[in-house]
Length: 346
Image 1 (cartoon, rainbow, N blue to C red):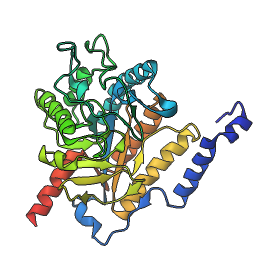
Image 2 (image 1 turned 90 degrees about the horizontal axis):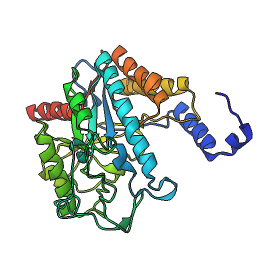
Image 3 (image 1 turned 180 degrees about the horizontal axis):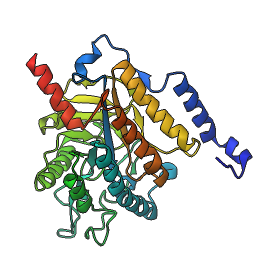
Image 4 (image 1 turned 180 degrees about the vertical axis):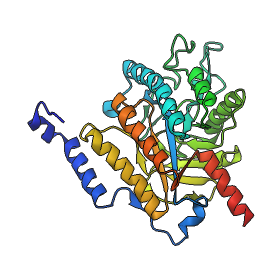
């Protein structure tokens, strides 16, 4: 990699974080191989040595509202990231078809809409607003949560609506899963989101999804802010994903009755790493999952840079296809169904 200004690059804290991450990975400290007293094979379908779950945080422009600190909301950036998602999703779907790899698309419910408009001067009046708060990722202390909703349609504002992309996902030969990522990308933590707000958001997602023949079963909390798990269970969900460090682990049955899937690694691009190192790192994680009989949970944002899509993401799927006799790739829903059938049978 050519560096125009080596001195300024070395002074960048990201340079040292990238080197430390490489060291921890080389030492086997990241991701952590979670210890267990259980027989890991009971969580792996017969004939395989590991499971791989891949999920996308499918948000488009919705993820960028009320961001705090240096990432504070910029309409131009939100629009750019939404449109980059539009470019990447069909390419990712083509690779999934090529290598027969399913993905769980954790979708912001508003993206299902073809259009929306104000009712009596208010945007989405049926959705109660989350209270004002200053939380880990959001600084929401004024205005209305839906202020940035253009209230038009997917042809006029394609960064805020994506019914066509969802139709494309559903039409592919690979059976993908449409999961839930809340209706408007809210902080779902118990601290900042009352149950009535959370349930209104989820019920709206369910209503819109059912109109497309989709039954939502898997949930991913925006910003990894976990909460309202009892409400999720009550509304018919079966699993959620967490991000408490990078882990090669086994699924955990939460007290709510939901299955918890622990993140292993984000499929994200780091300028401090070479393309070859990205590919090698992810392929080694897959090998470690196979060696230790663990569940590998990859996740990503479809707004990833183009070099992350090809060659890195493509190589990851190609590698999983090459090792498909050892590691099985499933959606969150299908893996949860398999576990329900297996453990009920016992």
